[in-house]
Every structure is written in C-alpha cells, then in structure tokens.
Length: 91
Image (cartoon, rainbow, N blue to C red; front, side):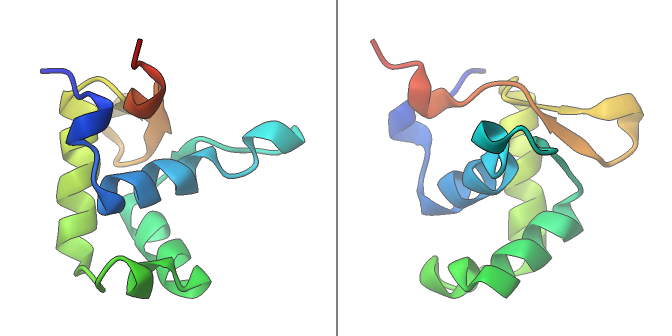
C-alpha cells in the first residue's frame, strides 16, 4: 500500500511536518516516538488546529504511514524514522 498526496489529511500532514522539522537546518530530524509527536504537536498548538485528536489517533496514523513505507519503525523499538513524504511524490 502506498499513499498519494490525496490520501494525506491534516493529521498525517502534521505528523510528517513534525518529523521534517529541522531538516533544512542541519539539526537532528526525522526520528520520534508517537508520544513525542503527540506532545510536540500539543505544545506547538498544532494539535488544536487539527481538531485535538487523541494520542491513539496519532499512533494509528504513524502506523499507517509506516505500512505505506513512508516511515520505518527502527528495530521495532517504537521510534519511527522518516523515509519519504507522499506529498512530494506527485508527478
């Protein structure tokens, strides 16, 4: 299963944006646990902007992005690593 840009809603976009934060600044980026993503989105106010989904929803969306090959669960540890952004795959 792969996802296209049309399959990505605002929750998925918020998760991807969180993981991409720091990418252009030569800082650490692209790795996080679902709890870290949830808390980061909550702290930044983005969670409220996307309708205050519960933490389980964020976890489920991260797993969906993993199943589609856009994230990787490193060593089955629960720490997910960015692989690709389906929003960039449109031709």
